[in-house]
Length: 129
Image 1 (cartoon, rainbow, N blue to C red):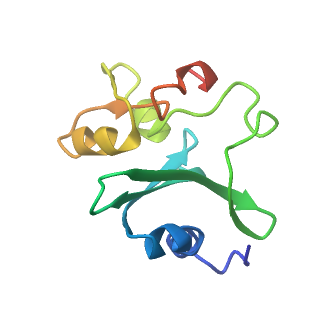
Image 2 (tube, rainbow, N blue to C red):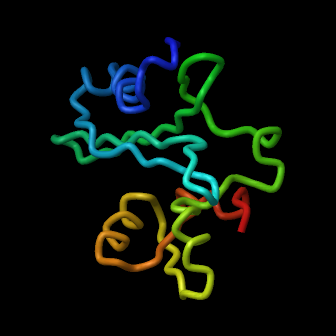
């Protein structure tokens, strides 16, 4: 862990260093926000160029720095926030597409679609829908 002088991107690279040494290439840092766009936690995504295997880990603030770890139920008693929550809050009357994973959500959002995810395929029951 290090101080908050470190950006989330720098922290993600530091926390993924062993995966990067093992041949994983950083692909994305997905930011989960509150309704107003304030970052709450992140998911680091890297992919092995040879095997195609994905390395996806949650990252959150911890004290004055960042650490790997899922948001806790104490931090989010109603469940984990949905991805791109600030977009959902800004467009309450629009139809939203739900995807499996942040990577797919970002690709569709780049096309102008309203999209969200709870994360992985097994995360829906832990989310605050």
